Length: 363
Image 1: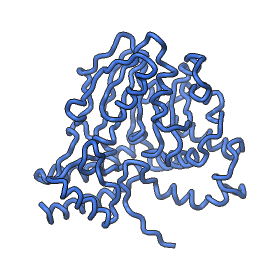
Image 2: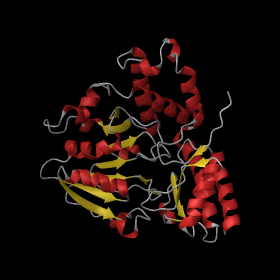
Image 3: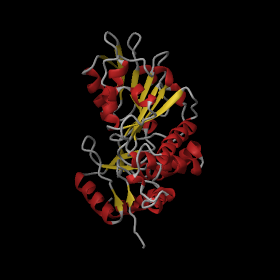
Image 4: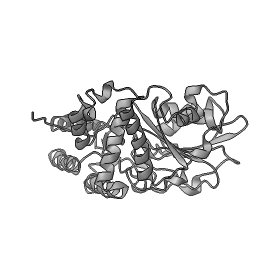
């Protein structure tokens, strides 16, 4: 049966690789000859345990990490990590530092304040987050328990292209919206967490990458389900995991490896983003990017038009043309094109062609 697919530029849940969806479709009723769907399979079964183990191995391979790290598959989204992190690693009397670069880092700080003492090490809120902080602007507290940052900002369309130096402090990153979009030194981080629904798979699972030495180094009064060592000790199988979501994350990790790994993903992502950014820059001001050039995101491209009326018309006409999810977040307004790993080059080319035509008709 022929299926006409649109180009989905939504910030999340986002587009998934077509090859992955086709693999899921092929095995949906009978997973690898088991006579049942992965949706029906026990998380204690050997086939699922193999998926779980392979997913951790694939993630560590792509990140260049060894046995000194664990990969956990948790629930509750990145938003649960906002509180789980300080519950485990912000002891009484200590201070956790937060670098603010957008709404999600603000939300993480808000949750940490409920648990312990915090310090804003840097912020670019005054300029409505048109850029990420520079190294010289970061002022850490004395011996912070950890330093938290958000690597990519979906709402404002900014991204860290060089991660901050924090000395001996534990660096923690929310990488929900740009995980595995390009190579980076993962060993620089004590903890990385990411909701899967933007660049890793479907909604329902959160990936946590954590140094082994941190496991168990936390208060024993924390509820069992909110302890990282609980999940590490049971290989993410302490309770029923989001089996289908983990299965799909593993398929996406396989797909990234087949594409050539993170170096290949970076080249593809840079080429895709350039199509749209160049259109903005060459529009003579008809399209205006929100993010400063040095902080532009490869994943989320935010821009405005001369009027809100034109922006509404752009979204309406683009949707009819098969380009969906382009309305910007209310914090910024305008338009937003999310071009995660799974967005094909053809999708960005189609958006570029539409932008040129729209300007020609309305400029």
